[in-house]
Amino acid sequence: MAAENTFRQWKKQCLNKIDLSKKGSVDEDIASLVRMLNDSEQYFTTSSCSGRIIVIDGVSDCPDVQKQNCSWLFVTHHKCQKMDVVSALEGSCGDAVFKFEPFVLHVQCRQLEDAQLLHSVAINSGFRNSGITVGKKGKIIMAVRSTHCLEVPLSHKGQVLVSTEYIDFLVEIANQKMEENLQRIERFFECLKSAMRHEDPHCERTDATEEKSVYMRRRRRTQGSRGECGQSSKDIILSDEDNGLDIGIDLFT
Image (cartoon, rainbow, N blue to C red; front, side, top):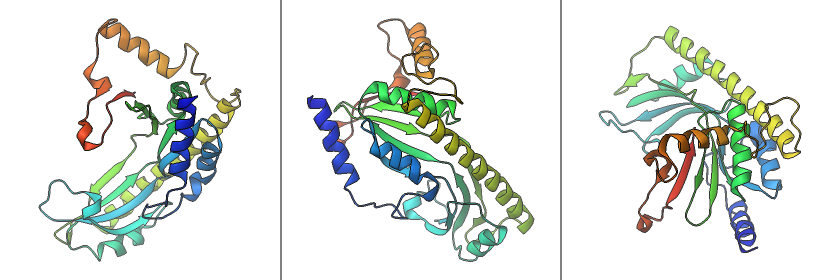
Protein backbone atom coordinates (compact mmCIF):
# COMPACT_ATOMS: atom_id res chain seq x y z
CA MET A 1 0.00 0.00 0.00
CA ALA A 2 2.86 2.38 0.82
CA ALA A 3 4.43 1.72 -2.58
CA GLU A 4 1.08 2.42 -4.28
CA ASN A 5 0.72 5.73 -2.47
CA THR A 6 4.29 6.71 -3.29
CA PHE A 7 3.72 5.97 -6.98
CA ARG A 8 0.53 8.06 -7.01
CA GLN A 9 2.40 10.92 -5.35
CA TRP A 10 5.22 10.76 -7.91
CA LYS A 11 2.66 10.70 -10.71
CA LYS A 12 0.74 13.70 -9.37
CA GLN A 13 3.92 15.73 -8.92
CA CYS A 14 5.21 14.89 -12.40
CA LEU A 15 1.98 15.57 -14.28
CA ASN A 16 1.46 18.87 -12.46
CA LYS A 17 4.88 20.19 -13.45
CA ILE A 18 5.27 22.88 -16.09
CA ASP A 19 6.48 21.52 -19.44
CA LEU A 20 10.02 22.92 -19.74
CA SER A 21 10.77 21.42 -23.15
CA LYS A 22 11.75 23.70 -26.03
CA LYS A 23 8.34 23.17 -27.65
CA GLY A 24 6.41 23.38 -24.38
CA SER A 25 3.85 20.69 -25.21
CA VAL A 26 3.51 17.04 -26.21
CA ASP A 27 4.12 16.39 -29.91
CA GLU A 28 0.94 15.91 -31.92
CA ASP A 29 1.87 12.48 -33.31
CA ILE A 30 2.19 10.95 -29.83
CA ALA A 31 -0.44 12.97 -27.94
CA SER A 32 -2.94 10.08 -27.87
CA LEU A 33 -0.27 7.62 -26.75
CA VAL A 34 0.93 9.89 -23.94
CA ARG A 35 -2.66 10.56 -22.86
CA MET A 36 -3.44 6.83 -22.72
CA LEU A 37 -0.39 6.12 -20.56
CA ASN A 38 -1.07 9.02 -18.21
CA ASP A 39 -4.72 8.01 -17.86
CA SER A 40 -3.77 4.48 -16.82
CA GLU A 41 -3.12 3.41 -13.23
CA GLN A 42 0.16 1.66 -14.07
CA TYR A 43 2.08 4.37 -15.92
CA PHE A 44 2.91 8.02 -16.40
CA THR A 45 5.27 9.68 -18.87
CA THR A 46 8.25 11.73 -17.72
CA SER A 47 9.55 12.90 -21.12
CA SER A 48 8.85 12.30 -24.79
CA CYS A 49 9.65 13.30 -28.36
CA SER A 50 7.89 11.96 -31.44
CA GLY A 51 11.06 12.28 -33.50
CA ARG A 52 12.59 15.29 -35.21
CA ILE A 53 14.83 16.57 -37.97
CA ILE A 54 17.16 19.34 -36.80
CA VAL A 55 20.07 21.48 -37.91
CA ILE A 56 22.19 22.75 -35.03
CA ASP A 57 25.21 25.03 -35.13
CA GLY A 58 27.97 24.19 -32.67
CA VAL A 59 31.22 25.81 -31.65
CA SER A 60 34.11 25.10 -34.03
CA ASP A 61 37.06 23.06 -32.76
CA CYS A 62 34.97 21.63 -29.91
CA PRO A 63 34.98 17.80 -30.12
CA ASP A 64 32.09 17.36 -27.67
CA VAL A 65 29.29 19.62 -28.85
CA GLN A 66 26.28 19.58 -26.54
CA LYS A 67 22.85 20.71 -27.71
CA GLN A 68 22.50 23.23 -24.90
CA ASN A 69 25.64 24.98 -26.19
CA CYS A 70 24.40 25.08 -29.77
CA SER A 71 22.21 27.34 -31.87
CA TRP A 72 19.14 25.63 -33.25
CA LEU A 73 18.99 26.67 -36.89
CA PHE A 74 16.07 24.44 -37.85
CA VAL A 75 13.78 21.90 -36.18
CA THR A 76 10.67 20.03 -37.30
CA HIS A 77 8.78 17.02 -36.00
CA HIS A 78 7.60 16.24 -39.53
CA LYS A 79 9.20 15.71 -42.91
CA CYS A 80 11.22 18.59 -44.31
CA GLN A 81 12.31 20.04 -47.65
CA LYS A 82 15.78 20.67 -49.05
CA MET A 83 15.29 24.44 -48.92
CA ASP A 84 14.52 24.25 -45.20
CA VAL A 85 18.05 23.00 -44.62
CA VAL A 86 19.68 25.28 -47.19
CA SER A 87 18.03 28.32 -45.62
CA ALA A 88 19.04 27.20 -42.13
CA LEU A 89 22.68 26.90 -43.18
CA GLU A 90 22.72 30.58 -44.10
CA GLY A 91 22.70 31.30 -40.38
CA SER A 92 25.63 29.01 -39.59
CA CYS A 93 28.78 30.56 -38.18
CA GLY A 94 30.20 27.43 -36.56
CA ASP A 95 29.94 23.70 -37.23
CA ALA A 96 26.44 22.88 -38.45
CA VAL A 97 25.15 19.32 -38.10
CA PHE A 98 22.09 17.76 -39.73
CA LYS A 99 20.32 15.22 -37.53
CA PHE A 100 17.39 12.89 -37.49
CA GLU A 101 16.45 11.80 -33.96
CA PRO A 102 13.78 9.07 -33.64
CA PHE A 103 10.94 8.70 -31.16
CA VAL A 104 11.90 8.49 -27.51
CA LEU A 105 9.61 8.01 -24.53
CA HIS A 106 10.36 7.66 -20.82
CA VAL A 107 7.63 6.10 -18.71
CA GLN A 108 7.59 5.55 -14.96
CA CYS A 109 5.89 2.27 -14.10
CA ARG A 110 4.02 1.20 -10.98
CA GLN A 111 5.49 -2.31 -10.82
CA LEU A 112 8.27 -4.21 -12.58
CA GLU A 113 5.67 -6.42 -14.28
CA ASP A 114 4.11 -3.31 -15.84
CA ALA A 115 7.53 -2.23 -17.12
CA GLN A 116 8.17 -5.71 -18.55
CA LEU A 117 4.91 -5.58 -20.47
CA LEU A 118 5.75 -2.15 -21.89
CA HIS A 119 9.27 -3.32 -22.74
CA SER A 120 8.02 -6.37 -24.64
CA VAL A 121 5.57 -4.26 -26.64
CA ALA A 122 8.32 -1.76 -27.48
CA ILE A 123 10.75 -4.46 -28.65
CA ASN A 124 8.08 -6.17 -30.75
CA SER A 125 7.19 -2.82 -32.32
CA GLY A 126 10.74 -2.18 -33.53
CA PHE A 127 12.16 -0.10 -30.66
CA ARG A 128 15.02 -2.49 -29.96
CA ASN A 129 17.14 -0.13 -27.89
CA SER A 130 14.48 0.04 -25.18
CA GLY A 131 15.26 -0.80 -21.57
CA ILE A 132 14.20 -0.72 -17.94
CA THR A 133 15.98 1.08 -15.12
CA VAL A 134 15.18 0.31 -11.48
CA GLY A 135 16.35 2.94 -9.00
CA LYS A 136 17.19 2.33 -5.36
CA LYS A 137 14.24 4.50 -4.29
CA GLY A 138 11.88 2.21 -6.16
CA LYS A 139 11.42 4.26 -9.31
CA ILE A 140 10.97 2.01 -12.33
CA ILE A 141 11.62 3.81 -15.61
CA MET A 142 10.98 2.24 -19.00
CA ALA A 143 12.75 3.94 -21.92
CA VAL A 144 11.34 3.36 -25.41
CA ARG A 145 14.12 3.96 -27.92
CA SER A 146 15.40 2.86 -31.31
CA THR A 147 18.68 3.12 -33.16
CA HIS A 148 17.78 4.48 -36.62
CA CYS A 149 19.40 7.88 -36.10
CA LEU A 150 21.20 10.07 -38.62
CA GLU A 151 23.91 12.66 -37.93
CA VAL A 152 25.94 14.38 -40.66
CA PRO A 153 28.21 17.47 -40.45
CA LEU A 154 27.34 20.14 -43.02
CA SER A 155 29.64 23.07 -42.30
CA HIS A 156 32.84 24.04 -40.51
CA LYS A 157 33.41 27.54 -39.14
CA GLY A 158 30.41 28.72 -41.12
CA GLN A 159 31.68 27.30 -44.42
CA VAL A 160 29.24 24.84 -46.02
CA LEU A 161 31.09 21.64 -46.93
CA VAL A 162 28.47 19.83 -49.03
CA SER A 163 26.54 20.47 -52.22
CA THR A 164 22.82 21.15 -52.47
CA GLU A 165 22.50 17.79 -54.24
CA TYR A 166 23.95 16.06 -51.19
CA ILE A 167 21.61 18.01 -48.90
CA ASP A 168 18.72 16.83 -51.07
CA PHE A 169 19.98 13.25 -50.62
CA LEU A 170 20.21 13.65 -46.83
CA VAL A 171 16.72 15.12 -46.62
CA GLU A 172 15.34 12.17 -48.59
CA ILE A 173 16.97 9.71 -46.18
CA ALA A 174 15.78 11.64 -43.13
CA ASN A 175 12.22 11.78 -44.47
CA GLN A 176 12.27 8.03 -45.05
CA LYS A 177 13.44 7.53 -41.48
CA MET A 178 10.70 9.85 -40.23
CA GLU A 179 8.08 7.83 -42.12
CA GLU A 180 9.40 4.58 -40.66
CA ASN A 181 9.51 6.21 -37.23
CA LEU A 182 5.84 7.20 -37.43
CA GLN A 183 4.89 3.69 -38.53
CA ARG A 184 6.68 2.23 -35.51
CA ILE A 185 4.92 4.69 -33.20
CA GLU A 186 1.54 3.68 -34.62
CA ARG A 187 2.37 0.00 -34.25
CA PHE A 188 3.55 0.56 -30.68
CA PHE A 189 0.36 2.45 -29.83
CA GLU A 190 -1.94 -0.21 -31.28
CA CYS A 191 0.00 -3.09 -29.73
CA LEU A 192 0.05 -1.39 -26.35
CA LYS A 193 -3.71 -0.82 -26.44
CA SER A 194 -4.22 -4.52 -27.18
CA ALA A 195 -1.75 -5.61 -24.50
CA MET A 196 -3.37 -3.42 -21.85
CA ARG A 197 -6.73 -5.00 -22.76
CA HIS A 198 -5.08 -8.45 -22.46
CA GLU A 199 -5.77 -9.18 -26.12
CA ASP A 200 -3.30 -8.91 -28.97
CA PRO A 201 -4.65 -9.79 -32.42
CA HIS A 202 -1.92 -8.11 -34.48
CA CYS A 203 1.28 -8.39 -32.44
CA GLU A 204 3.37 -11.10 -30.91
CA ARG A 205 1.99 -11.76 -27.44
CA THR A 206 3.48 -9.40 -24.89
CA ASP A 207 2.28 -10.92 -21.61
CA ALA A 208 5.19 -10.30 -19.22
CA THR A 209 4.72 -13.74 -17.63
CA GLU A 210 5.00 -15.69 -20.87
CA GLU A 211 8.13 -17.65 -21.64
CA LYS A 212 8.20 -16.01 -25.08
CA SER A 213 8.64 -12.56 -23.56
CA VAL A 214 11.73 -10.73 -24.76
CA TYR A 215 12.48 -9.79 -21.17
CA MET A 216 12.33 -13.41 -20.00
CA ARG A 217 14.51 -14.59 -22.89
CA ARG A 218 17.14 -12.01 -22.03
CA ARG A 219 16.94 -12.86 -18.34
CA ARG A 220 17.50 -16.56 -19.01
CA ARG A 221 20.44 -15.81 -21.31
CA THR A 222 22.01 -13.54 -18.71
CA GLN A 223 21.59 -16.04 -15.88
CA GLY A 224 22.95 -18.83 -18.03
CA SER A 225 26.09 -16.89 -18.85
CA ARG A 226 26.99 -15.81 -15.31
CA GLY A 227 25.54 -18.42 -12.95
CA GLU A 228 23.18 -17.98 -10.03
CA CYS A 229 25.42 -15.72 -7.94
CA GLY A 230 27.35 -13.92 -10.68
CA GLN A 231 26.64 -10.36 -11.70
CA SER A 232 27.27 -8.79 -15.07
CA SER A 233 28.79 -5.32 -14.87
CA LYS A 234 26.78 -4.06 -17.84
CA ASP A 235 23.50 -4.77 -16.01
CA ILE A 236 24.36 -2.63 -12.98
CA ILE A 237 24.74 1.13 -12.85
CA LEU A 238 26.40 2.48 -9.72
CA SER A 239 26.16 6.21 -9.21
CA ASP A 240 27.38 8.56 -6.51
CA GLU A 241 24.47 9.28 -4.19
CA ASP A 242 25.90 12.75 -3.52
CA ASN A 243 25.21 13.62 -7.15
CA GLY A 244 21.52 12.89 -6.66
CA LEU A 245 21.59 9.80 -8.85
CA ASP A 246 20.12 6.43 -8.04
CA ILE A 247 21.89 3.11 -7.87
CA GLY A 248 19.93 1.07 -10.36
CA ILE A 249 19.68 -2.05 -12.42
CA ASP A 250 19.61 -1.53 -16.17
CA LEU A 251 17.85 -4.11 -18.31
CA PHE A 252 18.60 -3.20 -21.91
CA THR A 253 18.47 -5.31 -25.02
